[in-house]
Amino acid sequence: MSPVFDLNTMNWETNVEKAADPVAVLFYSPTCPHCRSIMPYFENYAGELEGAISFVRIDISINPWIAERYGIMSTPTFAVFCQGRPVAQIVGAVYPALIRKMIEEGMKNAKECAGQSTVIDYEITGYG
Image (cartoon, rainbow, N blue to C red; front, side, top):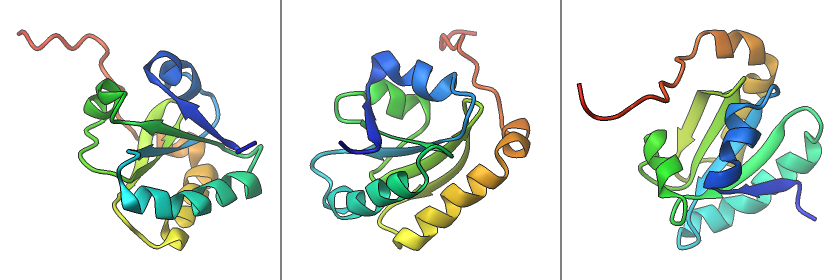
């Protein structure tokens, strides 16, 4: 069983936005070749850091609302959420060591980084 949990629009809020502990997120698409090549590293980090930070992934091709909400324009996009807020992000095919560094820094500074991030306004209607 993979230590990376697959999320969707229905369980996103519970597992990411309302999570008390840091969460590492991979926004991916099954048609993305870079997503497939980096996935083993992401899963390996999830196994190594299990218990310290949660690892999740979400397929933006079938969950476009989540991608739109966080401004995800391409895959893969890696993010760290602290206390339900996005605090770090890396986009594209990057060296796996950079992803690990971002995750470790997110874990180390979890409470401080969440205090410095912007709260998401859930009451967005598009009308003034």
